[in-house]
Image (tube, rainbow, N blue to C red):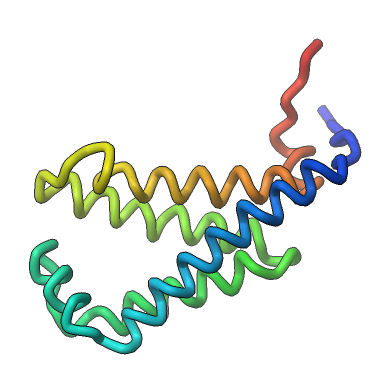
Length: 134
């Protein structure tokens, strides 16, 4: 079946841009503190059971995924990579028994924000995953 997506309304397009923009700002902040290798990042890594010298590598992986998400031509690939990255965060918090709704599911919330923002602003994704009221 070949579905064509309905045209994106201005309201949906701007809603998607705002959601994606908020996510991008948060992820760039997270990359920055990982690259700066702050004490609080090292402490958090230790509490999560990760080596304390891994923060810059994680920051680089997150930055690459985020930059791919920013550009329309590679946004879907970026969303896929971010989903994997965030899935690792969820697994890490689940493994150490972090609180469910505030810590463990935070990566799920960010993933929903990423895909929701992309769905609202990308007609190709709407065509791939059509919501129909037939």
